[in-house]
Image (cartoon, rainbow, N blue to C red; front, side):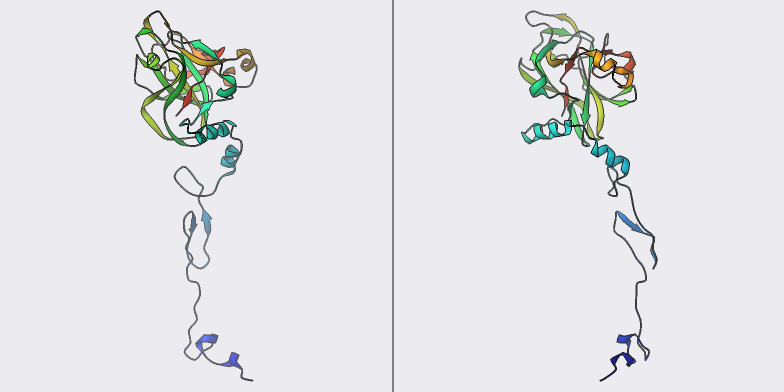
Length: 260
């Protein structure tokens, strides 16, 4: 039998003018990276809103602990809704049954949760009764970010004296911010609304929005920052910025303000 292994040829790696070959450098395709060379250090970057990569344990915990509002919003969107964030803990199908009049200068602050980074255009509400009034000062909606007990205004609509007398009784109203918020990070925010007038006119007078009645005492004894959940701030001519939760008042009526 022929001994092929003893042949002096390049194919078998021997001498006789043959050559050897092997790995001389190792690269990588993002999100992986390589230090190069024959013994590289292979790594992967952490992901962000603009970079692909690995999911940190902190981010995993955040995603794993998303409030159930995410399922509610997804369900609404599946039925054709453009809503992207709704009040925390409220399902308007079961809970929203009360109409509450807006009060001059009383700022409404409703906590909402945005489950997925997305562009936010403005605020939606249910107009339980159209208003009949002469506007003054600021009338409009806004959105606040939350950090501990501090709120920062990150978007607001332009002053619109007709905002609360545009949408007919029993319809959904909406108002866009002066500029949309592109790729707004997921998290908890406060949607806000403000009504001001120099005179109210009969019939109707003050506009009414749909709400649910709650007990402030429940939230005063819970462990929310400053014992605040749904709240209001009186005597406001415009949307304040910044503001502190401890300076607001717990509210009996929670207004169904959502983001779209």
